[in-house]
Length: 617
Image (cartoon, rainbow, N blue to C red; front, side, top):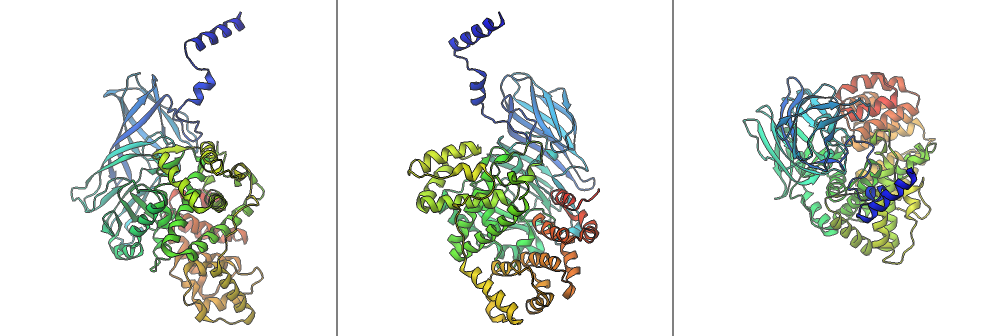
């Protein structure tokens, strides 16, 4: 009887035009997302009005978040929340019941809010706590000018939920307005339309009119100033750094113009960069309209501005077309590395681009070696369910992703590949992309169209790097290796040949010391080039790594390493040096330094180094 009932039910569904459960799922707008509690196919946020007060005395943000929602006849909407104090919630102006679910170490808690089937708006009154991971509160002493405190947020990957209750999935895009109240001597800026001058009543109003993913909502508050580069580009920095930053990034307008020539119009109107205090955990963060950047790229010679090109490229790959889930992270970063290197080639020539690409290739080799016992980590398409999505933010996504795209370019030809990428960004603007959807689009619009056979699945779904990879060469680096060998064999240095070396050449020189190199050669190089006292943070970082690797202690290098680790919070830089300590069985020495440095690190950096060194809080 039950079997007959099921058959009759299916017949009725068919006759009335209803779909089967499988068809319903395939028609859903949003895919399953293991890193968010939200159920956006039931009810989803579309716009945020944020009204908050930044309280430096108590080191909290408090206020309210009001959302417009699209409701698919649901009686509940679920937001993500972590380490937030939820005070009360309203639905269409009436106070409503809510429930915070069980706490998960990675995901936080689901905030379940009762709504009606016709509910259009919800408002959450809340405050942050001392455990909030996205925020870093800095004392005046931790800033460049050392006169006022500073605050910045870092939302990627899933930390926005720690300072705003929100549906914290990259596939959920929303517009936002914000009112932010700060101390009158400070300025607030966001990933939105920004002020150019300080408002001495301490109240700032923001609009982001294009839909963005929650991890791109960003806030910084400090004693900062703005200086324009062009009518659509400029920089924010503390007063003592404004002129240095302005000079360093003076090619920003040229970068935007070069990017537009490659892959279409820059759609965010303004491209500004704010240089944050040194504890910022990343090189840069591509927050729309306002990239956040580390001061470690201020080298005085524009040699590290490839970072700006990379963050600008995210305005297309990442911000415009966004990975739907963190398992698809390579769609953001692989494309951006490729695009950023193309910008650098357009501005500074093929030699510079080849050096950047080859350094990335060497970084990829190191990552492949690190994952030799866990090869699944080297797939482009990941499975991060039950894990922190930060686990996938490594050289595989960035540099294997880049190598895949470069190999495609060399296979089909640059002209056809550029045409394909430009149309890809235009067609999918302000939407999200899964790996599977991209593979289908690639096959239909590039490979089949040009009758090309390519091992796409091998590149994306299998471990390691396929044999048809593009081979990256650099004549400049070949010369560096030749000179390094000559210096070692002759026990003498000729400084004339290094006088015009770029940062990338110096990095290649230091990173390619032979494994059997003697201490006297490190001392020779340090004396000739004063590497221990380098003011270029990238060169200093690789030199300090080698000093640890080779147990070199000359020229007061130990004190310099400790000072670097205490005062720089960029995760890539400090983790590179801490890894060298660990490889050299010097974890105890590393922990002595880390105990001093950890209070200066953002939670993103601290969590990584905690795991690396086995630090017990």
